[in-house]
Image (cartoon, one colour):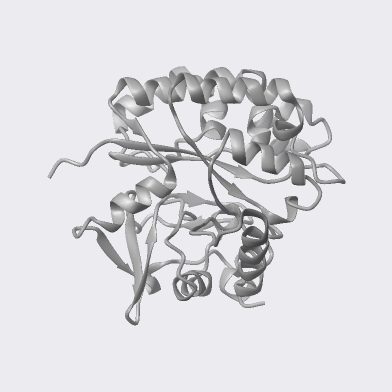
Length: 294
């Protein structure tokens, strides 16, 4: 059966790096927000946002406005966004409680900080009735937040264990190469090269595209980081919006239809042929299992 090509545009709504007080320029600078919204509207691409709920108190009005006018499909991205304890039951429960108090409804989707989802985190999400998780990069990462998910599917699947399961909506990666298709990687490699890679390896029929607010204006955050990490983020930083538009145009021109994460989750729940993966197959990053239990 041929699967309809679907693309979800997502944003991890978290604080800009290197700022003492919580700051998200995309929410606070109307020129940046207008440019971002204009691209989404031009390509008729609804936005799904994953909110770090500790931003609600200091940026209450800005978060409210963004969620009402730019991203009406909202889920949680932890409370503390702590890579040391990325998805503890306590943190998820705090995020869910703050989310419900602010929006008046329970959250249905979750994304772990840095993709550091744990088995205990997934068990808790399943027990609490979350509709889906969207934390898995089906790729490999070598730094201190490293993971190896090369054995996991590149398209939606279900983690299951002991009669419980939860839908996983993984990030977009190129077939074969397992290279992540996101604005950060497109900035790093440049659009001409990335477009060639897309032609050589192609994308799955269902893709979830990720970004962070600061991906679009890293050059405006001079104190955010130093050394090689800053050099990577600064690559094509001033062209980020243009590159983002190239990505959306490429997807649209190749027949992808844009949808929210909630819409994608609903369609996948109806798919009886969805792959089922034992939870034990999730290879947690080094120390993640210990961190996740703190």
